[in-house]
Image (cartoon, rainbow, N blue to C red; front, side, top):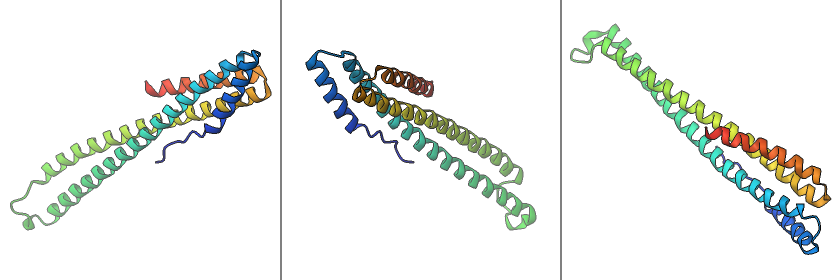
Length: 172
């Protein structure tokens, strides 16, 4: 699966320009806080995107392992069925009950791989939501600077808090 991209380069430039202008004019110091908070949002969004990609890849690998185990399980079952139908063709081979026991072990491994895949996919989903909330909060913060509306920045902070909650929830 693909890594989640966080396209914030243009926003950072605009935010930095506005923050520098406000700092030079010594007015609206809150814009400096917007710039700093937005940079932090971008950092967490980038880390979240990287981690979401990692968990997505791990989920796919675990699912492939589970599929391999299920194929092995089926092969053991087919082998046992063939031996049951025509035992004289396999005079010195493994007994059928031994194959069935091996099948049970293989099934448990396949189920464990599937569970691990599902857990990794769940973490991916949580991190993807986190990145989305952080990206939206970055955009709202940029709009807050451009329009000089403090309430928009506060809304961005609230969304960022939701994104950070999801980010740390995925790590637990």
